[in-house]
Length: 504
Length: 120
Image: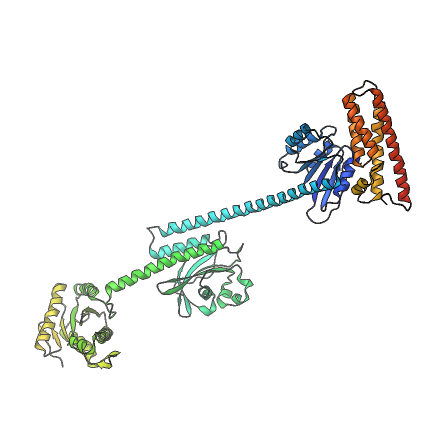
């Protein structure tokens, strides 16, 4: 008998290898014949245990069947030597023995034997025991493979999680950098995120604001070295029909394309074709009543598909930009409310005073006028407060429309308006301008059809003062004095301080 | 002489395998019995004991019941230090049993060559 003989039925893919070692060729042949009935098993037979040890050092074995009594190394020693090898602690070893002595069995168990079969082997029992241990070995190998897979995927997950945390931290650093102006922060965030959205791949980041059927470039990352996707100045308008910027808005969530070339309807879009874009991520955001789309674009298809981490990252960047734009919008609104009259929309008393003071005390000074509605409280009573409010809106708009050459109108309170006229330096010039303002009242004002009254005629009087070498407060009191004179005399509609002028 | 049920179970009904196994038994048993016969009176009993043990093992394995039984008795007797005369008688008995196996082997070979089956 050869030292090694390969027998058994080999079918299927996962073949299990059984190493048989018995110094009696007859015994080994008997065992081998019995194992032939086990499917997917290949037997490797050795009459020399030393040769079996050598062979098994560099061959895969799923189960050992070892005779107890053999020329050295005997079954016990053979088992110890196998167990001492790295990775062999779990391989099933069955010992064939004619000895019933407990001492021998204990020694075998201590050496690392998993099971015994007694000589002469019972064919059914032998096959069943070997089958059980092979199944155990099979599931252990399967488990090992799964654990290896899982370990690998956990490592991968750990790596991506770490990368993700690092890029989020970088974003946070920019966001909390006190040295950056608002616009710089947005640009820095776009630059940083374009760099790390796919490390090693070249992406540019842009933020578009939607305006009608166009997307307007609101902000962009710094010029990228080596990425020439055409220079697009801020404020550039791109028709939505020519790009895929609208897709993310329709979807209401981040959307990614790993290879645009593989998406025929996108590939046909004018702008994408012109720019030869291959991969993109778009994220929609809303801030201050406007819709925005944050875009990352590259001329290369992605090296590996965009994953949930990437989408979650760009969504966080979008959320950050959204917060910034929302803050900016709110700040503008607050500023507007501080400076403008909430009813009429023209500047309020405070704002008017600031601007008028600047105009009056600046080079050349400025003339000032106060416009007062006649019997507005009566109109309010007759037509109701809502109609009165509507009329005030109309009057304010009409007066503001008259303003020219640096002139401006503010609502000083109730039915009183202020007009700053920096261009009127002489009494005739001032009078001419004031007549223009008074002319507003020649036509009736629309009420917006409240309480069945369509149009209301209103009258007004104007008190004014020319620019003078006095303080702003003095100028204001001069205009005030003039309007009081105007109210008292009731003979003219326009009074200019120190010089009463009767206007028709 | 041979347990046919056991042989059939091992060979799964394959007669040529049965003949192969019995041939192997004869080949392995012959040197063992020769060694037993060559044992000098007063020699180390443990050698005879090992030989008897091996003979018992291979005979039992293929169901050669008579040979196995005498080998088992010989194994026990050598362990107990039985008288040499008794041991020699047992070795002779074993040789006779092996002759029986040879006869059976011949018969099986004839069967295999002819129409009749071994396991029939």
